[in-house]
Image (cartoon, rainbow, N blue to C red; front, side, top):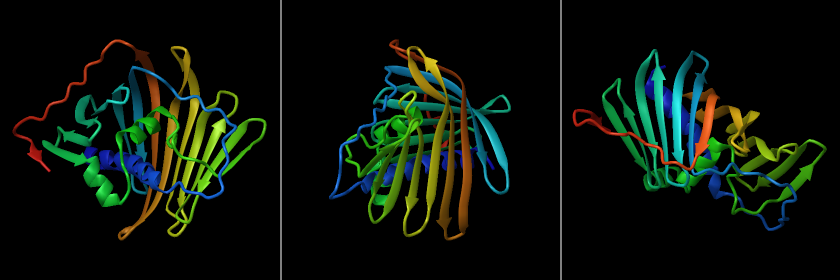
Length: 249
């Protein structure tokens, strides 16, 4: 599995979550009684270990992440001491530069939304990375809770979505998406909550993706474990350039 494959698996997981954004509809809805504390920041920076597993292989890379809230997400992927790739997400597109293949890929959200027949945007990707609420402007159908976990369910004829909330810290601990007709399934969990500044942040994120394709079942697990995370109100740099000799794809 090369750096390009790791990138696409990582992005597919984010896009699959984003594609779910289109279907939250219900005629019988109630207001939630579960508090969810979003992670707020001006600038975020972190270093993490990214592990991608499929049926054939396991690949690990180091990732540097920088985010300017509601503006830009920057990632640098490194392995064996080498900078293998960079990723830039802004308000209208995603750009990936592969230094090993000397190539560049750009995907506009407008094009991706048309391809996946749903709204795909920057805000959803940022929320997933930070462990924040995805459907802030969407109503819900069911709310239930016990002594430690709250459940917010959202479903219609296309998708069943379950949001699990840790009631001890009011952070999202798990989100499940299931397509009812295909049984395609995505499960992302957040754990190892630690203080970053004065706020609680998940240092361990895991995603499981089961997706049917013409070539067979797409079965991938993704682990993102932070070893460092920080927030600041001081401006960060987002170095990103595309060498002229690189092939645009």
